[in-house]
Length: 151
Ligand SMILES: [Zn+2]
Image (cartoon, rainbow, N blue to C red; front, side, top):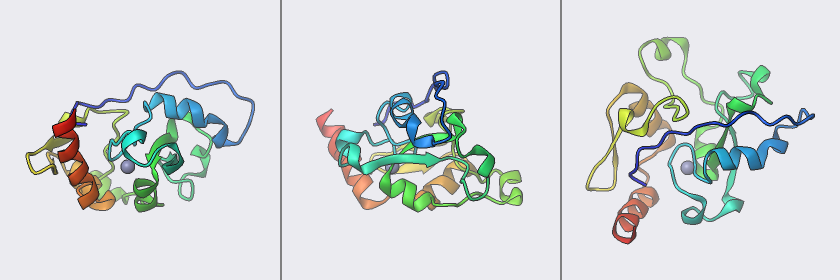
């Protein structure tokens, strides 16, 4: 939970289809069965049935990335639902407000886990991501505290 997190994507599988769902198991493996945003593993977040493929760059805004393997992230249902089709405007991006991408940067560069179980933002991107995805929602904070005692 509190470990630095950096997702290393493997080579995109060669699958002759235009259906991104066919990449499901590969994406799941790349993200080590962990939500790309709240970092809960499937076992702590209601299991596989609660996880889905997220389009990091939303399909509605970037249709060209719909089946792009490296745009497919593993996400719990809540994070995916909160993220929806949000994408920062060019103005926000220029000011540093964008989604933290843990395929590109390490957890510790953006977030600090504090004793209360909350994540504090170290960067504007972290601030944006925490706010939009409610990464300090009560369930997550409670679970982080619980896991800190158990693990
Ligand atoms: Zn999540």
